[in-house]
Amino acid sequence: MGKRAKSWYFVVLLPLLLAACGPTPAPSTTSPDTAATSAFTRNTAAGTDTVALTPDGLAGFPFGANKTDVSAFLQQVLGAPDAPIDPGSVGQCEGGAGLWGTHDTYGPLTVAYYATDASPKSPQLLASWSLSPYAAPKPPLVLSPDIPLGLTLDQLKAKYPNGGGLENVGAWFTGTAIIVPEQTDGTSGIFVGLLDWCT
Image (cartoon, rainbow, N blue to C red):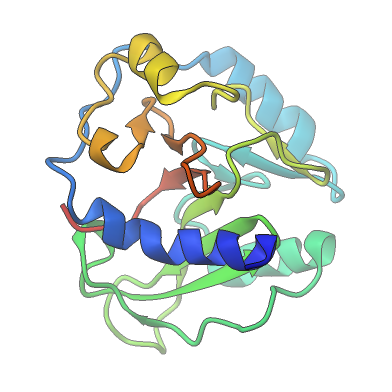
């Protein structure tokens, strides 16, 4: 199975794996460096050649931004989304339950959009982004310094002691992201924003 196929496979299966999880993890008591994130967002989102991946959104667009605007910018910088294009469906769990949503994939980056109802005609809003594998992305993608890199599951547990609830699927919540360090099959990832997963 190719690297791209593994990434897509992981993105599709993670919601199913997380369905076996316990309660939604409590926020970490470790506060992100707000000043660093603010400076990072200003410095990287201003140009049209960078897509900043932050705890609050991407490319300077906050979660809740209109898909039309976000998608137009992403296509300007990253090109058209990878085929096959997601035709959309109604979410089944938690944040996306009962809402119409689509996912656009640009190599290692997947961006999710959801409407505020179940209609495919309703405007969709930026809901989340995910990056696979769990590693520093290559330009033009740039990861916020508030999202930790290079940590094992045990290191994540030590650094973010309140992020439990997902360890049965090898994941941990940092207060800004759900991190899945590399698994035995080579899959890994970072997930930020509203996730359509069942607990």
